[in-house]
Image 1 (cartoon, one colour):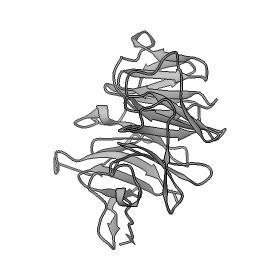
Image 2 (cartoon, rainbow, N blue to C red):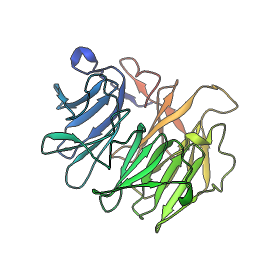
Image 3 (cartoon, rainbow, N blue to C red):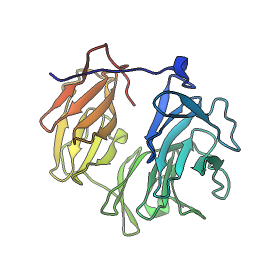
Image 4 (cartoon, rainbow, N blue to C red):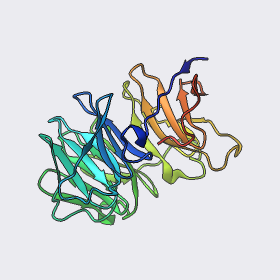
Length: 271
């Protein structure tokens, strides 16, 4: 079995908080690390605070980040709205007033438009105006957990009530063709891999959309509290899966394998 080495950084090394809520590697190689108590940039040796102009930086909880084609970093927060970092200055985005609802997820559209998911709905920021999607558009006013913009131009939106597809200006609920999606379908997220294959994930399973295949890990109610929380693809095409309560896994196409570390383990909750 392949084994890995883990190194851990904490507040002792300069993190604002040991609870890391978002990580982004920018085009220049720096890591942007969001925590429950602020934002820092990491160069591999030290953490440098990133101050958000117009924000109360003490206790600032970062929820998500993304980088656009111009190298601007977009930053979502729990209580203080949306920020943009450009030319080493990070300012709040005035989208017709501060976004009051906590931001949950950010995603860039194919024209540099920014999708902003919140706990009370979905917005699309074009740099000048913020369009909110409502029940009139077919999207309930509820918590958005993720937005995935596929290279085909389709936008997959995960909400409390399920997955919605935005295509050619139209929004509609997506109905899976596979079997039941498990205990908590509202926790589904979407991901497009390097081969342009689409995956849905949530609860204790993965779904490969193109094939309608479902892959289960936690079967027969083995661990009622375990859930897939995060999903990412490595440069070599391997899929990495973070869970609640069970640590880190790899998925190779034929099953889930726990990631083993020579010097211990990562915490059991991996976001």
